[in-house]
Amino acid sequence: MALMLALVCALWTWFAWTKAANEVSNNAYYRAKNNYENIMAVLEYKQYDFAHMPYPNTPEYYRLKSDLYEVHADSPYSIRYFTNNETVVVNSAWCVKGLLHYDEPVGYEEGITVDISDFSADEIQSFYDYLETQDITHDMPLRNPLLTVYGVLDDTVSPHLFYPNRIETQDGQQVWRAERPVTEQDTCRFYYQDSFAGSDYQQHLDAMRWVQARQRGVSNLELEDLAHHNFAANTWANRYIVIQYTYVYDYYDDISNYFRSFPMMVFILCLLLIYLFYKGVRRAVVYPLYDTTRQAQHVAHLEFDQFHPDTDRGDEIGQLNRALSDMAGDLHARWDSERDLEDRRQQFVAAASHDLKTPLALIGGYAEAIAQDISPEENARYLAAIEQETGRMNALVREMLDYTRLDRTDELQNRKTVDLSALTRSLLEEYAPLFENRRLSADIADGVRIRGDETLLRRAFGCLLENAAKYSPDGGRVAVVLRQGGGIFEVANDCDPIPADELPRLFEMFYRGDKARNRAGGHGLGLAITRKILALHGLAVCAEGTETGVRFVVRKK
Image (cartoon, rainbow, N blue to C red; front, side):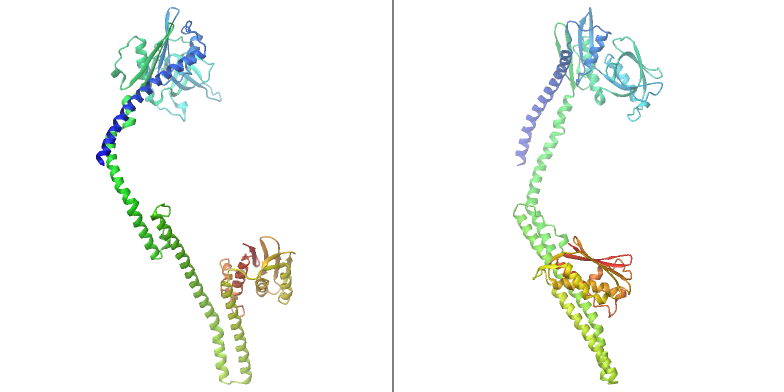
């Protein structure tokens, strides 16, 4: 298999190398031709007469250079024509951008573009060498080198175009002059910002040397004289005008973009394919089975938090993982249900034992006292106490049975439409004696109805009213509100403040606040039964602290 892969890669490499070489050469040629087409398009669009081209250093000549500035060429070119017994050469634009310098602030910055295409390649190279020694910044351009240019300014375009005859530094120590003199009509000072060629200016400069050499009649230019670049170049001419256009490119560098370190990569690729084939088989068959085994062990040890099977696979292993996931989900749900049930059972037994222990101890003490036959009066009092404690135990057992029955009920059997407005008014009349020494206010809306069991609702709402009357002091305020909407029922009463962390615990079984923890304060099951009854009717109840006491609110879920 490795030999076959090597043969295929070798043949593919040969064909790919040949095709890439042709693409690089053809791409360079067509890019050069594209430069020529751009030049001709501008000249024809501006309607220039090739037989009467403008004379140098005239407004028409500078208009021609400004029009050619619009040509977006990839490499330098030149246009040569003959007029008034003189050969005129117009080079492609090589621009330096900057900001004009003003002696006084003018409130804005005005840009300028300086075309140095008439400078020789050596002068341009010297100019760039100078700029490399300067601190150039784009954030604070007014700190850049300040240069002075002498030549002709075309202010009809924005930013202004300047065709220099010479450029000087601020201290006048360095001067760069144009190869073809330009009349010095205008002078400007500007801060250097950027240049046309950018980071590839060396390639652009090599192509410019080629164009200038052809202008001087040197046709046998050697490639080594132009660094390591190749040129796609051509010349177009008619009886009036000659256009020399180029495109510079690095043949071997472009080829390397296709085949950089290719032989070594082919060899590594062969080894990698063999290794991946081996690993792929193990990964597709063995590793998934290992993972499934580990996931099954997590389920066996009831480690459901660490159980994460791969159920997205479409093969048989994926089917096995999905079946294992369904089994683990059912087992987890049953385990949580059993554990929660066991916790609640232990809490229930502990709380019930605590509440039954006291009355049983009292009954045993009273019975022992009666056995001693102290006196008829004492015996009668002890018998009355035994009867009272027995009643409390019966009430506690009934409440525990009611809570157990409701806790096992998931849905009400007998539902009918209950008028909560009438039910609340009836409860207020029934519990009127409890509110004799209280300041009771009731705001009962008419027509509030709900589907449910009227007996259970009467018990739940009655518990909230009885609880408010029992724990409010004499003269305290009790407010009852029944309305349409989300929070349908509220009972607020004055009482000693209840800590915020104890409010949610009021609905727990056998829970009683510290100030209510006495034998006359109930068994601690009333509010727990109330919450269960309301939950069966799709309602929720919560306790909220107020400035003067507590408020119980019944809302729709």
